[in-house]
Length: 182
Image (cartoon, rainbow, N blue to C red; front, side, top):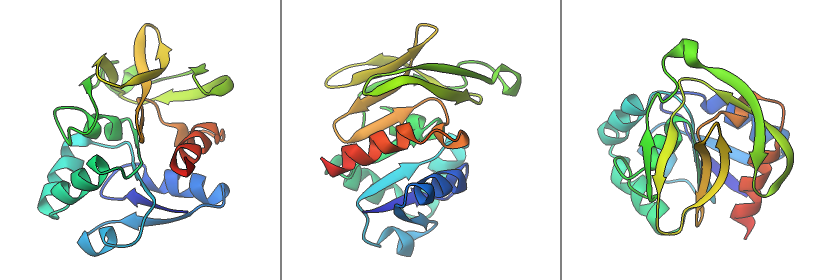
């Protein structure tokens, strides 16, 4: 298995380290040539969604990334990555997102919560996080915190409003790896 990590901005290195801990081959996508490499899945990390979107267009990656996701490339979006997959950006998931839903940096927090398909509570680090306001057509809600949807899945797409790569717990990444294998 070989996973591409979009490395235009944000917490891409943390995802890379998590995958290395799990023994999964991965590579960073910083340009069109990187994107052309063989990959079995993609991770879109947290960061600044406006910057990531601009760079996808500037580097002529937007249409290619969107097309491969729509034709079945498994993708895992965290925080800004969640925003990127919503109906207003790459438009590959049937979700509407509220950006910076918990306020500015001071509104960042840590909690533990349930996640369908993972036993026991998982650590959840929220940094200027979004949440999913609405879902439709095939979206499965996987986690809710304080009444807000913070994780969901649609087919081969997984999103979290929190940053699982910032904790030592590997179970959310393992969940994604099981999705890829199916």
